[in-house]
Length: 249
Ligand SMILES: NC(=O)c1ccc[n+]([C@@H]2O[C@H](COP(=O)([O-])OP(=O)(O)OC[C@H]3O[C@@H](n4cnc5c(N)ncnc54)[C@H](OP(=O)(O)O)[C@@H]3O)[C@@H](O)[C@H]2O)c1
Image (cartoon, rainbow, N blue to C red; front, top):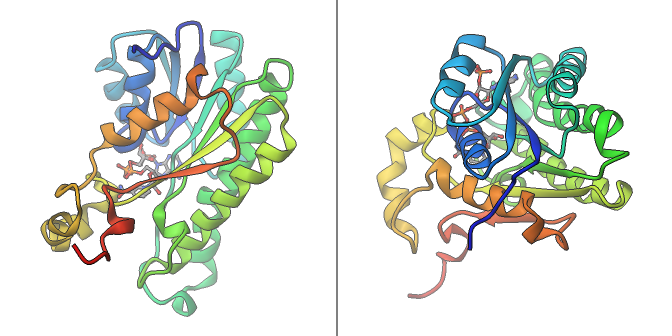
């Protein structure tokens, strides 16, 4: 079955590379008009050039509320409505023990990873979805569900994003709010981990490989399509089976 987003308009944050770019491509291939946004205009233009469909680009920091409004205004001006918002951009400026974080690192992580999704959702809901219900997709992480060494502060933001997803679903009526919690996916974001222990982690998975951005984009396309019209408030783990690997087989 072909999944169609024909006639839909989407904003994807963090769309210049990695998971966001793969989601933007899947949406365009399914017929959507897509506004790609992240911080660097050159990278956005290069990403948009690779896509075969109707796109626009807007440079904005996901943690800056004014820039979120500017991007939403530009999208409304260009496309007239916003059916889908993908809150994908995130940052991780600190690696280490949770109690070792300093105030600036903590604030930056929460600014981009939690305040961003909340205020981009607010801007899009007020501008378009309040009148024409749509879909908000938040990209969380399996780290938001399980404790692990080194990523404690980042994981706190992702746990909050998972709760934000169910909270907004509870409040926004016919606008659906859904989440994806990926395991390790081959992107720049995870490159240090992948270089150091990627092969070992892949071998331990039932699926015997790490995730590709396209794996996440496939689920994003389904969740944002009308095929998922009875799904809201939930966050879906997609991790190659990492969550079941402690069995005896
Ligand atoms: N890769 C994994 O293993 C993994 C696992 C679980 C969850 N995730 C989540 O998946 C999402 C995408 O990550 P990824 O792996 O695709 O990362 P990535 O390849 O590093 O891409 C990140 C994207 O976000 C943009 N970005 C970064 N900081 C930004 C900011 N402050 N404002 C606006 N845009 C910003 C980047 O462009 P600019 O730098 O030009 O702004 C880029 O387009 C994130 O939410 C991440 O937490 C990833």
